[in-house]
Image 1 (tube, one colour):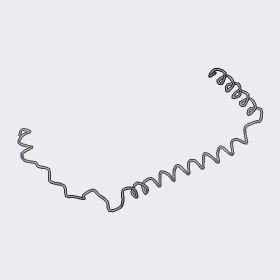
Image 2: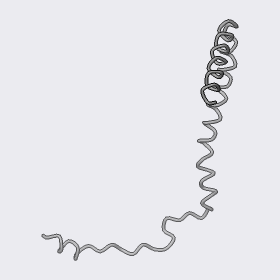
Image 3: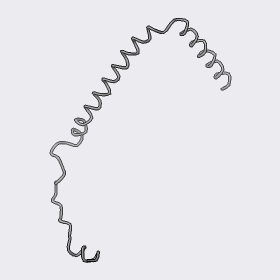
Image 4: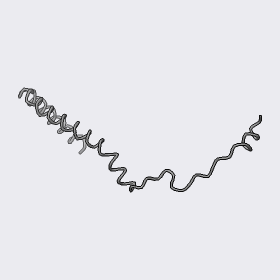
Length: 83
């Protein structure tokens, strides 16, 4: 059986109108599908926020002062390099 014979035997049927179209508005479908993703993102954000708030209490003051001095030196260096 050749390819031309197969094409002659099989013909695609015509698809009826409205076959894969829902009755709801497409934006409503989009919002409904995005709700679980947004909810998960909110839960992750809240967990990270509360974790950061609890962990920040464990950082000693000396470490914060050291980091602040380093950042100040870097910002002075960068501002002098940009001028």
